[in-house]
Length: 476
Image: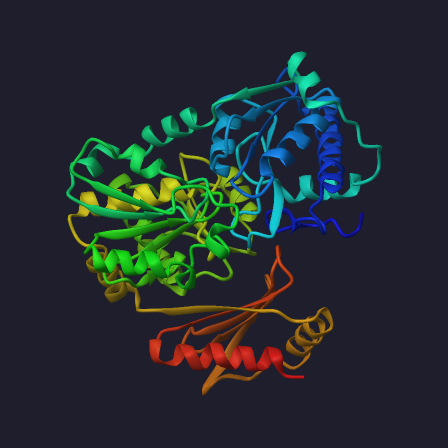
């Protein structure tokens, strides 16, 4: 039981080791116990208690989703199963549109192909709250797992199928100015990374001047042999294709299409913080909306400078979109973003959506009538140029413990030649220099690794700054 732990976004584990059919049923039983307890506590206003279930393109995800439904149905919870592999954000949209109690998505998101996982979506469409996750973890193994054969539950309508994509696309059409994009002569290369994004962006933009090509649109459980994470090192083909075809922009989505990666016309990768700043600038210019901006501790300092100049409140939170979603529900939040490529925007859903954010970036290009590089350079002239990097380091648990104890008791006094001016312990340990350069060490919430992040105003010093972090982490 204790080996099953929820991270920053749901529960994930290696298939056939931690992620097994037995453990999927165990976790689902705990989720069912939590949901029924919530309903008995008077929080259930929907009758009957109904949960949406979706799944991604990973190996056996459809079978694991059926197992989830069998346990839910045995607990007298009606479940609606998607009729195919879908983006996680489609589950969120379906839950909100149908006013359901919750949603469950079988996915390991951006993790390597050997992983699978389960994400829980609350009735508002966002990630499960800390309280919900804690409740589910407490209930693991508390009661015997109930189960009913899938076909039997299908016959008595405790399980049904539905199309989740149609309402998902309708929600996008009502939020993004697709007409403006279609009228503009843009050449867009989309990389779906063999995941659930498929040809959805291409489908939404048919019939106009905007030309869209999609790479890796067909599902592949092995994701071409790498993790479906839209970071620079995983987008080599997209970068080459954008340059070779002289495209306006490249857009990449992760395995379950809730994260965004952007490639500029010259093949350069925009880090997610830069993408958020482009969208924020556009939102303030076109919608004239005021509100707070939420960033995770690992995101760019450009957001800090930009929000200060625009007179917007800035709130910093730990890594994990659930922290952003919570504030989007409780506060007047304009936009929130995390370093991993998840961005949430007010008036849509308190959830990240890689498809929506990719289309909104195209809306920026269509309305501004400028190239992405021109827009980015304008922002850099106004708020400073920032170079960002990340390195994922595999360490033994004992090494991880020694590293964080050392950082807590004897943190470095300098980042290279720059004195450390501040230490942030909101999530991991972040060393901030006097020139606003920074180095962050934090444990991954989904894999057995330590993530090392670095950012500096001078691109020339980034390799040395990131290298110093790696040296510090691997020192015995």
